[in-house]
Amino acid sequence: MAGRVAVVVATRDRAAELRRTLERLEELPERPRVLVVDNASTDQTVASVRERHPEVEVVALERDLGAGARTVGARRLKEPYVAFADDDSWWAPGALERAAALFDRHPRLGLVGARVLVGPEEQEDPVSTAMGSGSLPPAPGSAGRPVLGFVACGAVVRRSAFLAVGGFDSRYGIGGEEEVLALDLATAGWELAYVPEIVAHHHPSKARDPDGRRRRQTRNALWTTWLRSPPLAALRRTAQLVRPASRDAAVRAGALDAVRGLPWVLKERRPLPRELERRRAALEGSPS
View 1 (tube, one colour):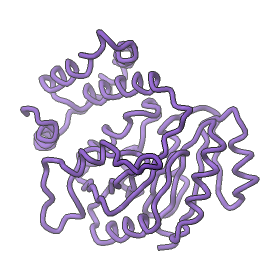
View 2: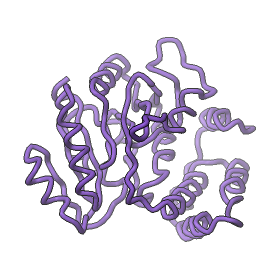
View 3: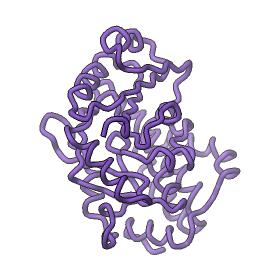
């Protein structure tokens, strides 16, 4: 497996948590190459990594690119498969080897979504639960259950497929950045599979800003809706997304942020192919 899977870790201002993540990654039997992309941290993140983990390559960005840092990292690598981790997440032993074997066996596999276990209690992430019970049954011989979404810190991608569709968009920041990438991979003909035997661990940082994250998630969900949904579906999804705005200030702020981004959204709008929109609606339990 050596030389086939690399790990990209995006981070910002979490030096202590990043050290824990790097220690866990260094313990993996796969011994993957690890690349840290720092989103213009104002603490000692970069210096700490270089001092304590000299074998880890660090890319120090001059500005915060959010999820786009992962794309920067993937572009610097040569390995065919890239696993993503956040500064508060890491991969279980053997997970990367299993993912690489799946990619080797399935040439149209673009992304593997892992089962993400949250916190010391190892509770299954709700997104993992939803992917595992999705309404799209796996086809015979497929890598796993087909999905149109994933958790970024529990994803392994085929590097060429990821970069061909543009990777993560830096305009999305962190929070809800996965959906548009999943849809673009599927539009390009790549398979996305949820494989619960592949496991990642996520211990969410206590430094998180819940309101700020909910604001970004609202904005990003609206952007993805407007970028990729046909008109009637876009109206329906928009109504569902903004419904909590009357009682949630973060959702209201996110909706306003989304409106401010309308010029670029309308310029780059590319609705999904009809069959893919039908699959997406089936996963949502909505009429197509």
